[in-house]
Length: 364
Image 1: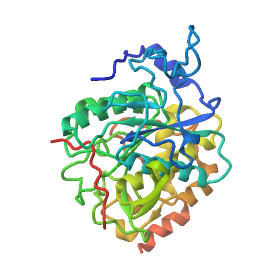
Image 2: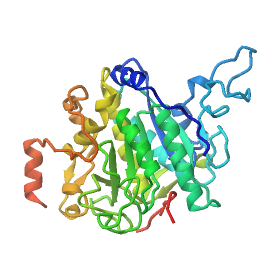
Image 3: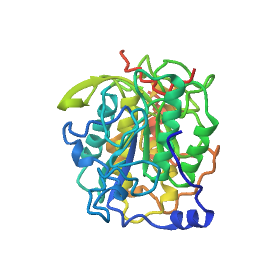
Image 4: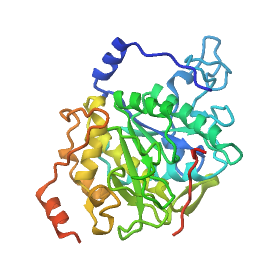
């Protein structure tokens, strides 16, 4: 295990949860994937820099490259995040998937208007490599989750998963829930109903997780997307989505990973809207808001909870109704009840192939 952390004292935890984070100028999204090529496109502008590893040490050396664990978190020179495959703080994407996902998050965040009160910062956490085993991948993803939770990011974007749950993984995500961290997780690309056999981490019944399926541009589920009327909260476009690739290139990818990244970008923009907020309340408020503002597609009924498909334009248009201060805190396994506007109820009453197959964390 690469992560070496400490148990947070309960008194300290209470203090952290009660502090409004409006003074922060950044919304941090941890991208747990194949790494990010920050030199591609405009991603450098969104790169997260670890404040504990920036500046100069007492000897006048740059903390980014001094070979010292300056912030004592168990990682040396983890400036942009951490590569759990190559054990390095330098972000490299040899696959392309992580850069594609990061590009979608950044573009969706910037597309949604100039009203954001915070800057987007992308933390690169690489846990997948083509030459590693499924167990190594799982260990890497758990370590990446631990890192993100310890850094108290705002959102974790997780595009991998597998059919077997992990107690250790679930416990970390419960801690994320207690800290008010939203987890946007891909429903998976096996083309199956995950109600019968789950897909994790998207399938953990935690109030801070929003599981995302993939559709085409007409709101129809693509054949490779997993689905569940009880475990998949929302769907978004994931067919032939254009985004950045390493080396400044662009290209199309298809899958629930792309749909997940889009939802993460919208969620980050919504979080940015509020200056003063209690971080503990954010996940339930964002999940509720995205689903309340969704389109409800006949073709998605029985495959996604209430047939909900992301409508980012409406979610932003309704942003003034997003209440991050008074949302009721949801406990694990407690369902989220939708408070739909009248015109959304009418929409429900009317009822009207290729895949990236990125199952990076597949369990054996």
